[in-house]
Length: 392
Image (cartoon, rainbow, N blue to C red):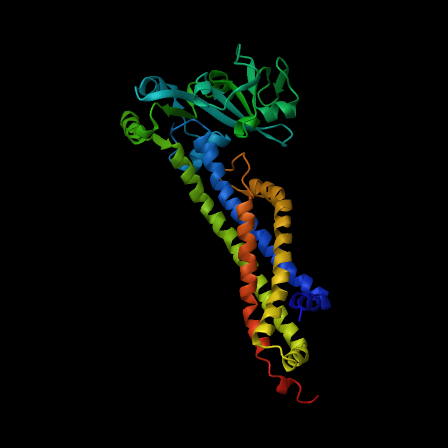
């Protein structure tokens, strides 16, 4: 007996039922791939954007909640709280354990037509020492108060070159492109950079900072540095490490993650019950066929084998199709997530499908489908030919 051919013919016999069962496996595989990719990708994106790629070890801010701090520090917005310039000049600037310290402002402004939100950074020249990946593709630092530096993506969208003018209706101000940054796949690619005093003036916050960024001479000294800074600063100031900032954001992401894994559980439940139901219906329809097979010498293992093979064929094809579907819908899903997440959304890619995730999802779904086939297979193998063929 050719078990594979036999199993294949049985599946083709009822194409509609086979396709519907396969669809549940496709949905389960694609859901599992996407959710795991988002879970791992979001964590990696947070670590990259807020910890590894910033060159910043400590933030000094008035925002005690890491979620609020992340929103202000990395996404813009204007907080009601601010750090006075005097704190930077008198409390932080000249501490011996600090390698680089930079006061900065950041704010977001929606364009007049409402189609885009622009992020503006007010920075000092220390950013070039603080951020190793902050490098110029063209041009250079501000020559005067009218200069502006564009991130790589903004320069592409705006179609601007060095010396070109940019008018901002929101401020009724015109700036001249002084520099264009190299693409570094962070929020910098989509941001405008201005001299810090110019940025403060645009939003009426002269002498007021969003936060202070600190890079230490020795990162192993970070806990001691935190304690010293806390002692020097007033009680309503917060000293937050980049790692704490990332961990705070991930805690807020936890509720979303739970909901996504519930989606996976629902998809798997539908798939499992779909397989069991399909195979039980198939067995009911094929009782006589199974009885004749047993009469001609097919044993318990033979019946279990061809039932399991049918499920195996469905699950393998469905899992492969599910992985392909996940690859195709991943960009759309990422845009959806970025559009509806109310928490901090990294600018870098957050749905990161890779070979390990796809292989793991494939194995999990196939094994789950095979496990779901055990009960129908055993039930089929226990059919008694005498009872089925009694009236023949």
